[in-house]
Image (cartoon, rainbow, N blue to C red):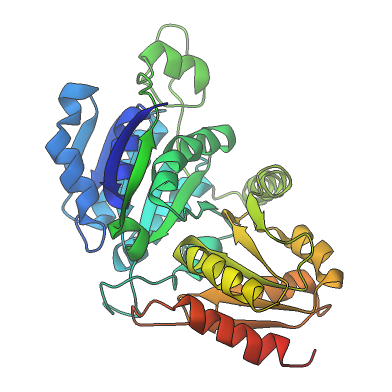
Amino acid sequence: MGELKLMKGNEAIAEAAIRAGVDAYFGYPITPQSEVIEYLASQKPEERTGMVLLQAESEVASINMVYGAAGSGKKVMTTSSSPGISLMQEGFSYIAGAELPCVVANVVRGGPGLGTIQPSQADYFQAVKGGGHGDYHLIVLAPSSVQEMADFVPLAFDLAFKYRNPVMILSDGMIGQMMEKVELFDPVPRWTDEEIKEKCPWATTGKTSDRERNIITSLDLDPSRQEKHNHKLQEKYRKISEEEIRFEKIECDDAEYIFVAYGSSSRIAQKALQLGRAKGHKIGLLRLITLFPFPYKELNDMAPNLKGILSVELSAGQLIEDIKLAVEGQVKAEHYGRMGGIIHSPAEILEAMEKNIIGGKK
């Protein structure tokens, strides 16, 4: 068993960054994720592992520092919350276009605008659909516990370097601020310069005697080459969609109705499931772990055996759009959500299922 600690979600992701051998963190404080950079500063990672920690002057500066460090083959990450993530969107598009690996965590707060500092899941579109310009995707992981906040950091870096693609850990203010027991993984050493050259032959590490310097860019003014590059990216996204879908089925074997949820909403929906089962309703839960790639085929295969689906979100209804695309009208699918930072209760979720799905018609 690894080291056990009681930690906030924000603290867990910061400690995991140090233990995962991250080379550099560039960030800017914003509620409700400021504890990430605060914890990192308190741990003096430059002494523990040699990790560079820098508070940039803005989120725009942070993501461009990430862009530069990623181009040199370094493990690099940033974190922010919704308005800050909006400012980073241009950088995400550049990084995706240049096919560089990096990790960003979004501890989502309510909006639109400055909104509230309370929990929300209204950044689903921004994360999953690619909030920046152009045809690109982030790989998106959705932790539902403080343990997963820690565990998803090394997983995110594995995926980022495997596919040379930015990865987002899409959390929210509830997971970021809550405290739970965490089993921390053993630290791994940072890569040496020689390991970077071996593992990342595409990286720009300066001109050497045995290799010309690589050029990292997302710019190509030749339409034919740019189209060829975009086809290459789309093929990569198709491969990711085939090989990296992650989800958890909870009591779905005999389910007539299911909740579909991720993150903090999935925790509350699981309790609603238990309340529904106690009343005789055959309810299951499909907990999404990857939001991109989305389990379209899995939901489509489940649909003929179901009488209804309820999407549970802390938003006005964003996840529900992908659910409806997946089931193709085979089964009734409705949305239930809260906004503004109010967390739904298990009883409310079950009531919505009974009113809109179990008591309704297809």
